Structures are given as C-alpha cells and as structure tokens.
Image 1 (tube, helix red, strand yellow):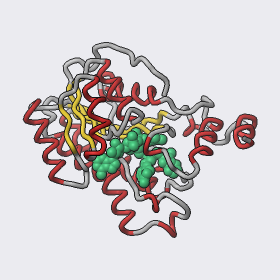
Image 2 (spheres, helix red, strand yellow):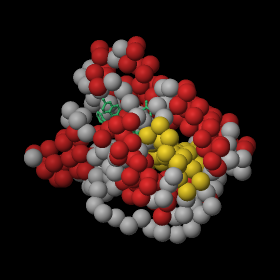
Image 3 (cartoon, rainbow, N blue to C red):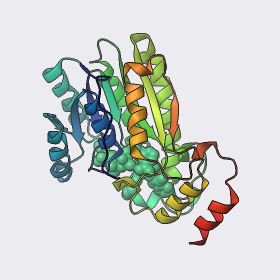
Length: 276
Ligand code: NAD
Ligand code: 0WE
C-alpha cells in the first residue's frame, strides 16, 4: 500500500466505535480505522493476542486511541470484557467494524469435498461468521441512538475460488447473517452491511498457495484492470458507517475493481497476465 492521505472532514465527528481485526499496518481494518479517524471518529481496538499487541498498540496510539482490549472471538470471557470495557469507558457506541476470519491452513487447499473436516468447518464458521452475530448482539446493547456495523467478505462466498474452500462457505453464512442482523436491528436505527473486497495483500492473504496467480488474474480480469486498493474499501466503510449511508442496510457492497461484474474477461490483458 502506498503512503496515502485519507480525506479529512467531520463525517464521523462525535461518533465512537470499535474496530475488531487489526493485526498490522496492512490490515484492511487499519485502512478503515485511519479513514474513520481522518473524519473525526474516536476509536477503540481489539487485538487477538499478546503477540499482536506489539503491532496494534503503536498503531492505535498513532491516532490517539486509548482503548485497546485483548479479544479472541472464540473466548466468551474476552468478548464479555471487550464490551464491558466500552460500556464503562464510553457508555455507548455508534459503530462496529468486524474484520475477522480464520480457517485452518489444512482447510484452505486442494479439494473442498475431500479436505473439509467437521472440526475445520465448525471452527471456520465460528470464527468467521458466528463472531459477527455475537459481536453485533453485544454492540447493539450499547448502541442507544442507532448505529452502524460493517463486516468484510469476499467473492468466494458467491462463486468458487480455488483453495478458498470452507472460507467461501463461511463468507456465504456471514453475508446471510448480515441480512438477518440488519432485519433485527433495523427498527432500532442500526444499519448492518458487508463490504466484499477484492484480493488485498494482508497477513490473511499471505502464504496462500496460488497468491501470485490470484493477484495477476484479478488484475487482468477486473473491469478496472487493477488490484483492489484498500483506500476504496476504507471509503466504502466511511460511507456505510457515517450518516451518508442512511437507509442502506442488509447490503453486500463490492469493492473489487468490478471483478464481480465481469462474465468473460478481455482476451489481451488476460493472455498477457497468464503468460508471465
Ligand atoms: P488480517 O490478517 O490483517 O486480519 C485478519 C484479522 O482476523 C487479524 O487481525 C486476526 O487477529 C483476526 N482474527 C483471526 N482469528 C481471530 C480470533 N479467533 N479472534 C479475534 N481475532 C481473530 O487480514 P485482512 O485481509 O485485513 O482480513 C480482514 C477481513 O477482510 C477478513 O474478514 C477477511 O476475510 C476479509 N477480506 C480480506 C481480503 C483480502 O484479500 N485480504 C479480501 C476480502 C475480504
Ligand atoms: O478471507 C480471506 C483470507 C482469510 C483467511 C486467511 C488465512 C491464512 C492463514 C482465513 N484463514 C486463514 N488461515 C491461515 O492459516 N481472503 C479473502 C484472502 C484470500 O485467502 C485466500 C484467497 C483469498 C482472496 C485463500 C485461497 C484462495 C484465495
């Protein structure tokens, strides 16, 4: 990601929210956090474990955030503690960003039907889909004047992407959860949406077997013939989490250079991409 200036303004002035899923400076959640902060938001962060505190601590500090809570979404005590801390420090919150996904490495390669285990399936769905339901319920309890929530998904929920496997199933569940949560919380003025981002070079996208091919293919086959810029994802999150997003809920919004819209890619850039 090139050094960038997130547009400044007052769209999030007076709003406070929780960002779940920053691991390092390349995290999509961090791009979203910087954009929200540049528009005046006050932010709290969760981090997954001690190892990540060394990375997330300085990032949170750099935008003046003083609420930093350890939270593993599979551990109810840390979930209780996260939302209790927000209630104690702020009383209420206005928004939630959920940018968390995980499947065992053995579940993300080869044949989906042969390699998906009961434990692998349960854990992927627990961490990547149920955690949004659980976080949304807890967050909604401290959203007293309406609010907004955003989660991150990927096209592998709608179409087969090699090796994405059980994560695709988890993302399909996550998108359905987004719609059901939106319906439940809508009457209370809480909007709930998903952003379907194209491939971005983060920790979660590192070390995936066919990474180089995937980024080349996505670039060549997208409408914009470019990879997805995390700033675009951050901009979409700003829209959905600010009052600009009024009346938008239950939506899965694609930010992927138009990759999702293409039925058949142009011959020339694709051939060139596949050749090298
Ligand atoms: P990332 O590695 O920076 O973020 C993933 C986060 O999930 C990490 O902060 C990690 O600590 C957290 N996490 C995993 N298991 C957890 C647990 N048990 N408890 C708490 N936190 C846990 O990678 P990213 O690409 O920024 O991923 C953020 C979100 O964006 C994910 O939902 C991912 O599926 C989604 N997404 C990523 C891409 C991409 O290409 N990078 C594309 C579309 C959607
Ligand atoms: O959602 C994701 C990745 C999420 C993810 C990443 C890992 C890597 C390390 C979940 N679990 C794990 N488990 C690990 O052990 N993306 C959208 C990025 C991604 O991952 C892929 C992709 C894309 C795109 C995996 C295979 C194919 C494409």
